[in-house]
Image 1: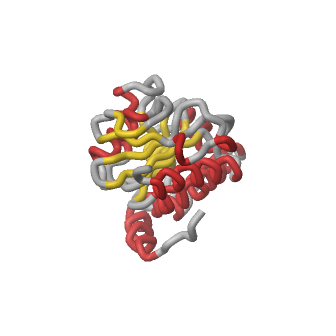
Image 2 (image 1 turned 90 degrees about the vertical axis):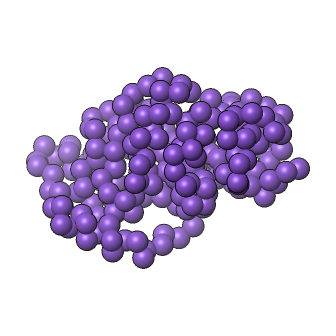
Length: 213
């Protein structure tokens, strides 16, 4: 089986997202890129039942190379991100706090320095129907210079040079969103960092490597 290790890594990542409460049911998807091949989680398969053999492999144009099942409906999104970034792995989820923040803002205010882990203020891509080329285009644009983004009225996405890196960022993104929501709920003004403080944090955080998820 081609890309056997990568396909198993997709399974592991999906099940880890479920264990951490970052997905509901079969919502969310995961992929790994190796050269011109992409291993992506299938559509509508319960994560606890997922096996490496169920994870399909496609080329960067979406053509099937080796797949028993229909790929995630967000295959166009994953391909668009791979075409526009140097990502080696992608995770997409519908966790509560990040999904909620995508309903109320265009950019997550830089209120916590963890935002620097994503390259700067985290953008929210405009709404588009799931599985569409428009959604893929919107999210790819929101990820320029960033390793994470929110999707309006939808969920969140993280990318990294490896799938482990992309997966490790998800809990941090959810934490940032949860803190922001709690701060907003007080009705008080939320303090944010200045442009100079943001620039410092973005540079300083480059040497920080979160543990594997």
